[in-house]
Image (cartoon, rainbow, N blue to C red; front, side):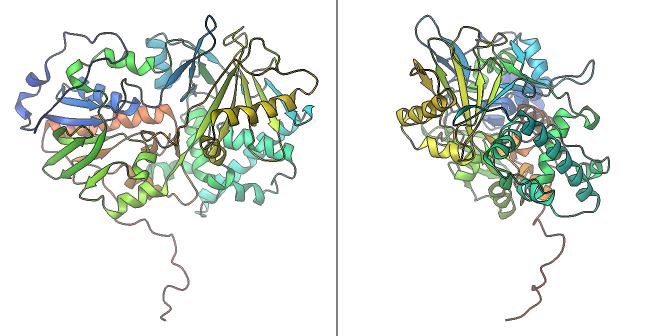
Length: 531
């Protein structure tokens, strides 16, 4: 076996030199393999898992990262003409749920404070201008109505938990309460609340807590029919509802010109040594057994360990970019394929001068639902005043559609909408234009996970369960409470690090249990019928 470390440029400050060498740490449990633990993926979950091992006195690990820097989906881009350039966030952009008074702080906010990453409160509720294809059109009252409908849907969802009724999609929920959108304005407001804005207003009954104990986004990026009614409610309550253990109902936009990734890169710089990271290292195969693992990289390098932690996105696991030997068991495959990898696309434009709304947000209603509907001004006193920057967001199937188009064709469509919003002025072409194709990126295959109506708590349990005690999984998708959130990845990395440390430190290694099958609450009526 040959082992190659490719850590050359980590994109952040030099590592601390005073840390103990991996070769001298935990000598009593020293592995005959390359390392005790391989951590595949250098995003939030991977780095926090590594930090957890380090704090437990275990430094015999290696982070294997496919890109040339740590950060995972926390990626930025410098946009703009010379002399007017800004760092914008292509991936995660918000700290979602911050802190209420002296209460529990979101760990992402804690990292931002520690590393002085600049972020600013983003008013998603009361700083909105509304448009249609004829220009300015005030239907903000319908946005208020959509919030009320959300609240009603959430209360009914709590009742369904109490009576042990089946989960449904949010589209069904809207139909049940008689709130199916009847026109493009109602549809645009529903899109803002469901597909785009994190559902912060669900109100669950206290009886929901036992369900969480028994089993274990600002943005959903999926249409109502693709969202679990019940899971969407708890997912958001646990982040935004203080009474449910959430942090706050605020969303802070990262505007730090070092990039949002600084929170994880600077945190890594506090404890990692260069020898503990292998960059530009693409994993192709993971061979596992009860005796350990062998990971093969694209360049032919083999890495061996007692344990491996996979922090790949659910999209990568679904796509089959990585071969497992032997093949994953059926219960694990079902869990992986039952989750949804949502795609959320921000399309950035820069103009020489600002000509658009003075609010932070704008909603555009079109006859075609999801056609460039949500706009946000970065040329705002709270963000980048004088920048000439604005961006529009599309999600789900529309994201996939534009990924298959040329940039110039996407720009033409976006400008058609923007000019429809401002029919009485001459809207110039942008001087800069950019968006990322998340679904097409083989390292991610989408933006973040989403819980569909057919995904059950048993699937979530199996998604995070270990295989043969050596193969571990963690990431935002494995978090029952916080799937889709950065802090979901944080908590899952923390938990995985703690549990793997128990395995490294001694014989009490149980792994995470799984269900052999996820069954229906009641059988189908025709199961006893013989042909």
